[in-house]
Image 1 (tube, rainbow, N blue to C red):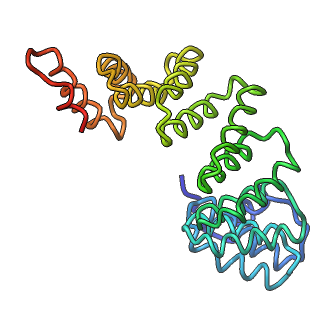
Image 2 (image 1 turned 90 degrees about the vertical axis):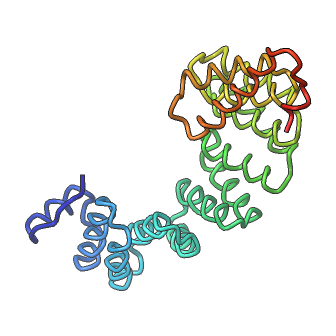
Length: 257
């Protein structure tokens, strides 16, 4: 539901519910009016308010963070990165390094992203989001051994974190290690039989390996769990094509392409 600011009185109620007063009054009011707009998903409209807040008080870190999130929401990653870095220069924080890293990642500045994610991890060594982003960045740099090292470490220390297995299996698939990927996805299914992504992953692997009976089996399990998935049409078409295998005279080679 959007926040509708009807009057100054209503705005003050919103302001007071968001953050305590700790800057000069004018900068504070501009900042929290920006917050109110951003919370109402009016990201573009919030930006001038944050800029006014920064002009009135250059130390207003909340205004830098708010405007950075607004720019990120409208996918202006260059400006988002600038303001996250400005906030970080005032008071370094885990979330600011993580956000800066994600902006650099979106901008394909992977070396810079690595530095940001490593700085974030130094501040919060057990944070799984930061570790995942670090591994994904190594993937983009084709530093696969480092990515696998991170995923394996995450799995060893947090075996319940299924996304580490999914990302590891996806990486194995991307470098044609399909047999290994089937084992990785099978671990996920063993721990959580309803984790639909694992069924899709293992089905693709068996398909690539030419193990069409197993592929069809897991495609079917996937579509039963996630019938409205974005890849649903592909999966149903593939199941239909694999079903032809049961008919006499059908060549396996005809299904490979």
